[in-house]
Length: 424
Image (tube, rainbow, N blue to C red; front, top):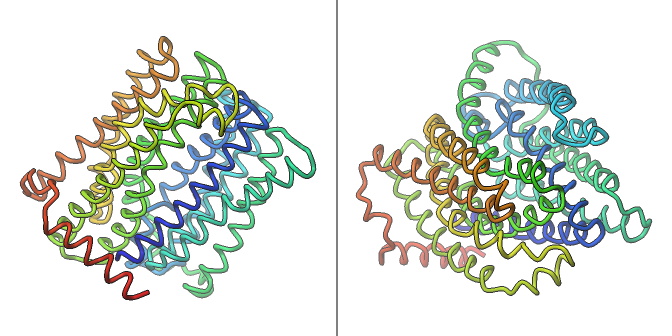
């Protein structure tokens, strides 16, 4: 397990570094307003993806061991295509992003969701390293394309960023298709038992993805509120701050990806609970020390990296840090429930967090701008995590003291690390 976690963490760390480079390039060439436009574009693409993933998302990890991949592949692709079309109509109606970007956003969302489907199918077969390679390819190709477009050709505008995304998403989709065919074989079109499969995909997918939808809204609706009340410049500064501090989740998300695949493929509930608690404690410890580093860095460091106009990044990080730390609980224990097929508990928790966040956004963002957005988001993280923890305690019947670090936990971490080094 530790090998897969370390591989996933290494991949996500490299991806985070590349995404940081992308943010730096965009911030320096486009300034706060251009970075704000980019933040709204990529957030809207991600927003569409969470709806596409109702059918083709993380639920596939749970369903791959139970059904043939052909029965999962086609409905997932069709659903993603339909969601992209529907998204175009909704975005044209709501005008939450500039009209000139809408068609590109929807096309990119469809391609991105196809990549996500392929990658998730591979995770369902516990092909973690392959999935990691696919995930790292996307930001790598993006930064290479940006360097060519911005630095070599000299085309420095938001449309160049969209071109870079087209290159990254299309190439990554081709790579992912190659590995899907290699692992699963050729696609076999059959309608036998397909209705039942689609029903299960909707049943599990809706419950699972509803949690992701409400989580994402809790985290990123702040961008649109900031844009309405304070403009794209503030969005650019805040988006950089939230990207930096949420990079701490590399630890817990690397752990949870492996944890989810493992739990979905075993039937020992007590083992799943025990390993989730141990992994959670390790995640919080490492995250705490990484957050301290971010908090002690001076404002001059952030302005040196991103340029003038980004002085308030440090404020955003301070406001978000407590919530980011506590949200490790929701990530790890939430994936325990997903691995057991109990998606509704995550949905309830994140829905409560969403309601709280919306109230806080209305109250805090108009008056306090970036500081209000960070505080409201932190409150949402805390409420969501508290609900997940309560559900876990109720189901597992474990004592709250089980979440305190113990000598046996340290021995477990050390044993796993030694075994990993030995295997290498």
